[in-house]
Image 1 (cartoon, rainbow, N blue to C red):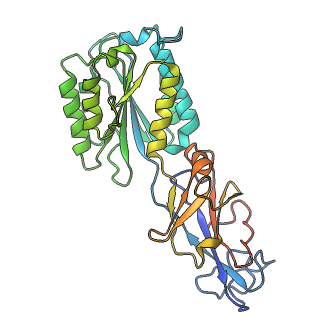
Image 2 (cartoon, one colour; image 1 turned 120 degrees about the vertical axis):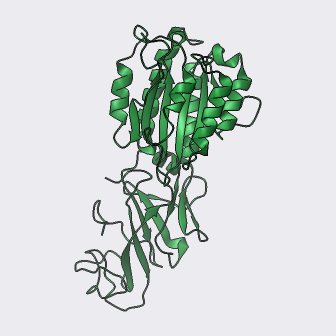
Image 3 (cartoon, rainbow, N blue to C red; image 1 turned 90 degrees about the vertical axis):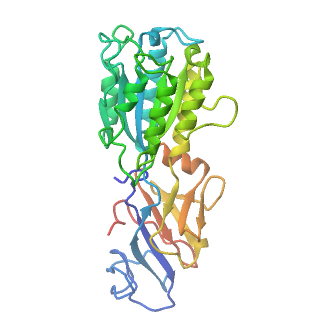
Length: 348
C-alpha cells in the first residue's frame, strides 16, 4: 500500500486521440498497445471510443518529514496539569499517543527522553529510537513503560539536544524536511542554561539538513520565562507570530491543539506530476478510490507552472492524517473522466 508523502502512485493520462486505435494502456486499453509511450493490452476499454490512456509514474513533490520527539520526563512532570487530575506526564504521553495514532503516516518519527535515567538525575537523553520507518509502535511501547512512579530527575535539555546533532538521530536526510519537537515543562539545568539550549538549537539548524526545532512549553514552569523559550523557537526557525512565539500549553486541550497545528504545518498536500496533462480541467484525483473534485476549498487545484496537484481542505486533512492508502490521478477524456482502474491495477 502506498502511504502519504512517500506515495508511489500512478497517473493515467488520457487525451482526445481522434479515432486512431492503438493507444491502449495498462491492460485495459482499446488497441494493440502501439500508442506513444503506451503499455497497451486487450480487453474492454474503460474510456470512450477515440480516447486512449497512458500510464506514467507520479512522484510526491514533498516527502514525509522527519520528526525527532524530545520529551522531558523530569520529576516536575509528575505535577498535575491545569484543569485535570492527571499529571503533566500522563497528559503528554496521552497526547503523543493520539498524535501518532492520527498522524502516523504523515511523518517518520523518532524519540529521545531526558533525563535518560531517573536514578541519575542529570544523565542526558540519548537517541532512544532514531527517526525512520516503522517506528510508531516502538515509540508507543517505550512510552508505555514510563509512568508517574518511574519518571524523575532534572532537566538536562542542552546535552540531550547535543546528542541529536549529526547523523545518529536520523535527521541527516537532505531530501526531507527535518524537525526536533522539544517538549519540556521547566528551565534547563545540569550544566546547561537557556542560552546554551538556544545555541544548540541554532547548531541543529546550521547543519546541512537545516533541522528546525518546535518548542512546546508545558505548564507554569515555562510560562514564567517566556522569553527564554521564545529565543529557542527563533533559533529553531519555528517562531510563531505574537508575544508567545513557542507553543505554551497549560491544559490537555492545549497539548492536542499544539500537536495538530505543528503536524499540519509540516505535512504536505502537494504532489508533482511526471508530465503535463493535455487538458487540466479533466484531471480527476482519487483517494482510496473515491473521486476528489476540482475545488480550491476541499478538493484539488492544478498548478501549471510547477506541474503539480494540490489537495485542499478536507481532502488534504485526509491525506495528512494518513487515512489514504492510495492516491490515483487520471487525465480524463473530453467526454468525461475515464473509469478509475481497480485497486492495484495502476502501477507499471
